[in-house]
Image (cartoon, rainbow, N blue to C red; front, side, top):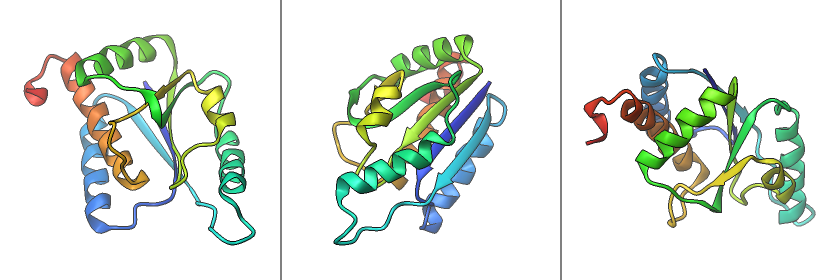
Length: 155
């Protein structure tokens, strides 16, 4: 199974990079993980919020395939428990070769991307930075695989 994570921005802090490396290592036995980091659009007087999201959407589009199952992270998306997420992940991976998760920049994802997604997910009703959301998603992917494998990590 291949999982692709397309994200705007790089992990800047060492503690995020360390957590990212740890979860990548933990996920290796379960899935081939590919993380695509795209450059965030800069804020300026001429570069409005909607313009930024549209330009970032164009960058994301270049990395999407028609055959991907696309799960976009969005604050208005569906919430689920870790056990429910494990069931979804199992279902998605049994039906699709590549599962692509999308994490937008500080302004989120453009509507064109959200409409293209097969599902929009919210990690929490709390708001996270896009860097922290990446780590939470990686942890939840690992947790989902552990739940599916009936291993003790999630207890």
